[in-house]
Length: 548
Image: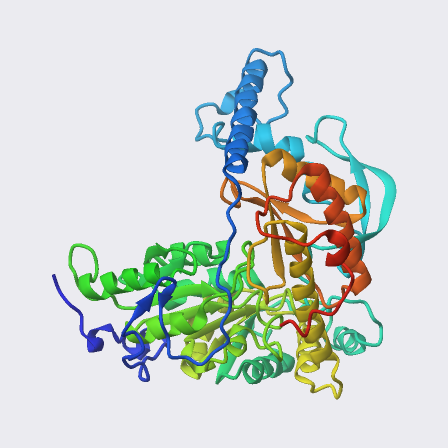
């Protein structure tokens, strides 16, 4: 077995623009505890991943529900095969039967027999901005959701509890959007070129400098699509002979980027420092499979806030492990930048850690900034390398001027560069709304996941039938929610995901809580076994800011 030295783990900076000159051994791992290695980092301590488990009967009934649905699915497939039931599924033409199949029948079983019956709860057509309320176009189905038709009626003022509009910058206030309108008149709606050709605008460079200043790093680079920021940049940073250590609940864009890179991928349990350190120790001690040569690079990939769990990354401990094992750290702050931290600078500010300790900082503008696109930030050498090696930088159309100005407008507001305190007010309002909403749901007896600072609030529903009934019942009460089930979540952990916003007033939140309490009783969704207070005391509207 070959053991790698510290020098062997340090890749040449010319290979991918990453440097590791300042990595050194960390002495704060002399002892461990149940929840992972101790760190000497002076940071805010959060209640990590205290996910309450449901009673056993809930898990059993969830499996039974999926089992019954599956049995009826096979029965209906048999009826379709013998011609007793009309088949709406796309099928191959008879003259193409010798071609490679376009549709795998068994793979479409779930979509055909389960999802299709309940898909009225997804892809609902919105006809207004994603503010605290929105307007919804009413649609009905005459063939069990295989097709829809619009009734011509609009459902007005549906409370929006699903959009990522954390700070409320997705708005149509004419006074706020004057500069955006001016950029449209000056530059037009689109750039129609890559930045390497004739699509590099002055405001692109201004935004990149603003992002670097906001995060506290040397340089940054912007991209027109948040998903592609991950999926197209990770392959430029690592490749064959490299190791990616990824959290098991990472976003699909991170997973796709890792697979496209050609690097070896190993997965550690969500936010579990024991699992992460075990993989890092094995990687350093054993090296690559068969040859046992040292890995060219070891890249740890995590998210700031996990969008399905609402949990916050254990950043200080991960940084300590990264330093100890001479690895690199890739941090996706899509849901955390702008949404957490005293001044909205993400989880690095939340934990009071140095941004320089994170090698690659990624984030998106699609949530807190009410726009589109993403960024990669870090050392200047890293950014300059990506400008010429990233597929997203070389081949993708540059970000439009209007979107660029919208991001700059929102970021300057957060930083106070617009001469107002509106940005800080929104950040504090979001934090207050988040803690208030979470506390009240817990008091009512719902099982919720995530950290108290996370504006992503998953409410566990578990059983497939209750997921559908919950979404439909909430819409009847003019509350729009996002429900998620298998295969996007574990089969026994279907949920409704609420996203809080600074634009939500206390009256809006109290209305949602009141309806949640009634629906929770109606559908028997209050599975928590923790001691709770009755709803009348839980929704008096007191300010929970002091409790934090």
